[in-house]
Length: 341
Image (cartoon, rainbow, N blue to C red; front, side):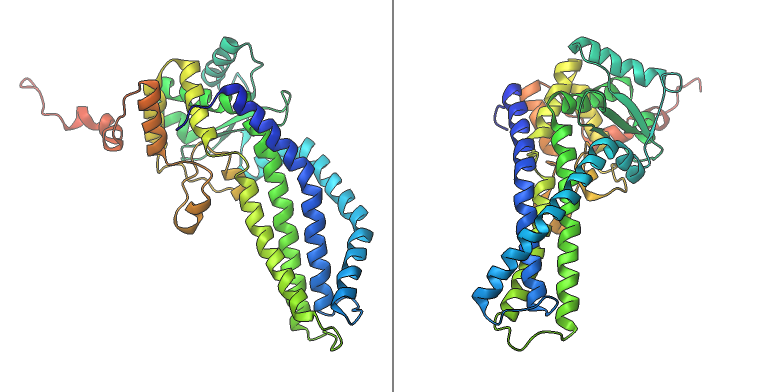
């Protein structure tokens, strides 16, 4: 892992957020244009009878529909800005908790925040045996850290503090803001791509194509390709934060807690036990999101083993093998009894 300056990382996240905001309207219009071509090819919109004429007509349809598309997008942004936490809570089953209900958890987080002069994010819990955690929010008033019940009962105090430090680093680095924006955009693009694919497919199978439309087959192919590109872009946008963000957050946890061994042992316990049902766009926020098969080509997280190796190499931590972590609690039970029983 190459060295990454914290200021550079934050500036990079700010740039990614700006590019997502600026590039999305252009991308949206491009998908609308492909949808229009596909509908002309499928006979759902009138054809001029020539390829050039249909290309121009699709452009006019796109421009005519652009204001409506942008208005719908703006409304979606507003809903997402004010309701992103509610949407994530509904998707994951998270619920806010008070200091009275979880005083130890609050104390750990607030102590970390005091050391950096930060306002403490709110806390949420998911009643699941899975071991996972994530941070969300677009600004200081919205920042929140969510942990699972399984994480709280499995990790010791030092390990839980390290995980909270990891998530707090995501907040400090603005990772959460970029990830929320990316998740919203990915959701919209996936929806549009699905509409594009279904509309053109049903229109083409309906047999309503005009025999005078010389570019029908090409236009339908363009629409299908645009739908496929839309799905791929949704995956790429979910990876808008480079995988290095997890290495940086692990390092940030060590900086906050001064305990690399706790971060390493926490990751070893979490490894392979983090599966939590949630939309893919939300899973990209998790502390671990282990993907297998074809999905691993677009993994949003580096493997736990690589993260542990980085902590050993650059933070001076000691790796505890997974088998040792799992058996640590059983050592006393498996040792021979003393002579006096």
